[in-house]
Image (cartoon, rainbow, N blue to C red):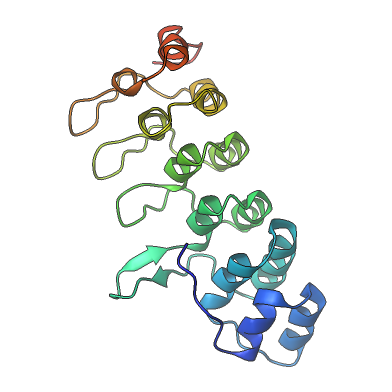
Length: 202
């Protein structure tokens, strides 16, 4: 996580004060800086962060703002940040407000790649319902399904893979190394799951 210490009273309120306090400060003219959205998710539990996000968005916060890295490169938007932190309620609030699930990160990956990497079927389904591209490829050609197969060897990946399959994820897409999802299956259970070719898989 890219942890940033709040620098204003309002940012501090977003990070640790009750939602009612955040709303009150806004009534008295508090300025919503881009970091406020990230501070809210950095320092709060999911449901509380979602409540504050809702208040900030209603007050005009830019849901497509970005957090930059130390060298000035674009790093995160609020939606991929919420996906990375596995804050399902925050993801729901941001999508409802119109956040773009297909906006690529610095490496070409999308929020769906992030949710697949985190093995979070709930967020995967929310992103797909919001129009996420099921076979989006990052700069190395990897799809969300490849993410689910490539870096996870446990049976925990099964629900993620099943969710992607149900949405029509392709088994035949190759990354820049010419590899398909099956090439990264490293356990018997995963090989069997991919071999069964669930309905909807290409």
